[in-house]
Image (cartoon, rainbow over all chains, first blue to last red; front, top):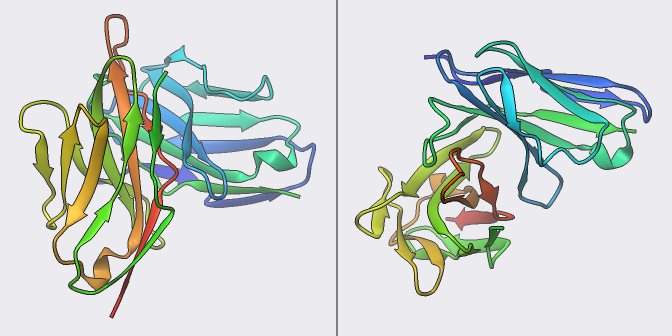
Length: 115
Length: 117
């Protein structure tokens, strides 16, 4: 079956521009997670959705970052006024439920480069 | 708060040799533990996980990991590696206690395993 998909796969932008990253979770998965992986570092949690509500936004690094989700479907992560330190691979994952221990299935990621 | 430390950033090994990738975690409450693998040019995928029961868990491709609560470790091992095991391996933890009902993962920094012929 189809896995988690993300678009674009690569994005190059200029400092100060806004970018929008998209995630399509596995059909029927109610939980959706965004993570960021900067070069040489592990994955950092950004935000979690259960359905279209976001119980935990604690990982968003600043108010330039926001995310939304439509129902139990597509999610978009928006970064406003991008900075060079935003350069990273942004990964989306979904799981069947939000239960602890549920396997998270990851997308291929969006590689963002801010010049 | 929870954290994960992978002690080796890179592990080179020859084919058919044994390997151990080390992972230590820190958490004040109960944990579930995971190993994810990222093969070259592929996405992150679950290798194995410990939720409860037997402390030794195995994957379908011969890896195993043992949950050691006293040493707060979850090291990954394979008795004989193949070239195809070359990948980056990530250890991850999620904690649970009253009030925490979702599986936010905290990842280690990853270990690059390179298997040489």
